[in-house]
Length: 193
Image (tube, rainbow, N blue to C red; front, side, top):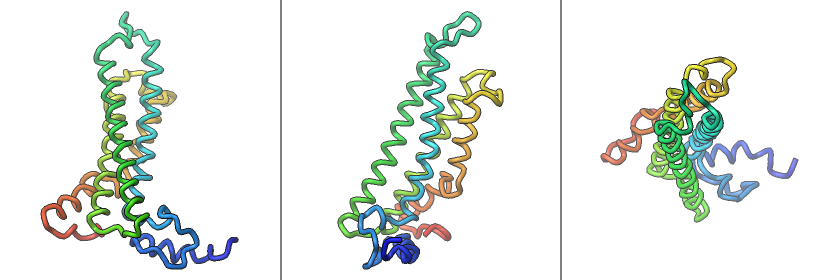
């Protein structure tokens, strides 16, 4: 065990509040970002990754699918569903990356995660999880009856995405309120920070 590693728990506690310990073993900014600010990004990224996997499978299945004489890849509603899902996931990825980069940049400059930054990050993580659920819901709604089979990967993706985004900290209602309250000049509310 490297010297100082046994102290990481106390360092992690201080980092959760955005206060890096002066003797921290690892001084890179990523080790000092507050859990309250950035954990939602990691959780939401699981939902986004699942939604990307679902989209990839959906596209692959649609390429060769013919239903009642209709070539699914030729159907405009199918093309729109794919384009919308792709754009939604791209927006979700950018929100995660932008939030993580902003937080990391603040810590690289020796800053801390004030309540405004934590509220921004929480809002974005909750919104990203909601976007991933929307992609799953829309793709599953147009996937057809065969996707209901327990052996179909789409239903696995659907459940996994809903499971990943069901974390209490990612609920949109819970994630949106502190940001809006702060924006309105109010305290974030009980239990938020």
